[in-house]
Length: 236
Image (cartoon, rainbow, N blue to C red; front, top):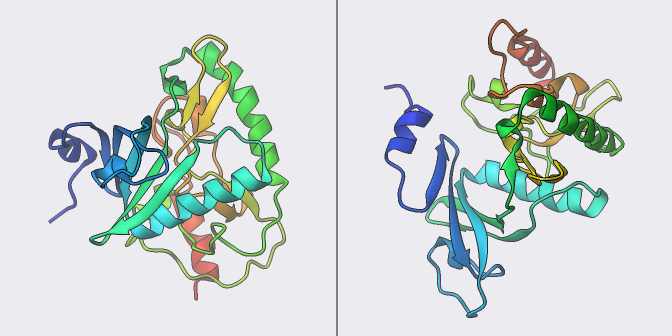
């Protein structure tokens, strides 16, 4: 039996859940930001804040947490604040600040061009980070979704990269993952870092230039075979 589609998953989503994909479910809750109350757990304080709670595959969750912590410590990129993360009953939960704004996907083409200039600056910041090895800050290698969806979706084990040009990539940088101030178009947050880490520069594609998935569409060059060959060369 084939896995359910995103539409089939979202047709059955629960109250407060605003999106489901094969690797995560996302909800918006009023919760104590430093506790796990957003996922229905007891709260130790009456102070509340609006948070985003995500239920993810464990390997995806840990990479996302590691990326947020690493980038907040080493860059000035606009990122959602990480409030809590934990595992329960085989699932990993991640609670982050809810960032209000509009998605880059909601803008006109000329407006997206303006935002793209700021994104290019942030991408250059990422390229200045020095890697120690493949993959996310915690060492897990999760290739871009456009490649991972065609595999068993588990982390890869790779030998050291022979070239010395690994750069930090988001690996899912679509217009849907950029939240903006609706008036100034300043970027408030770049989200969804679960595939982030140090990879060859060709892994990062500027899918944010148009509205759509982080994969080739409408006659665009599909590079998944190129990524597969590169990964296979270093697979242990």
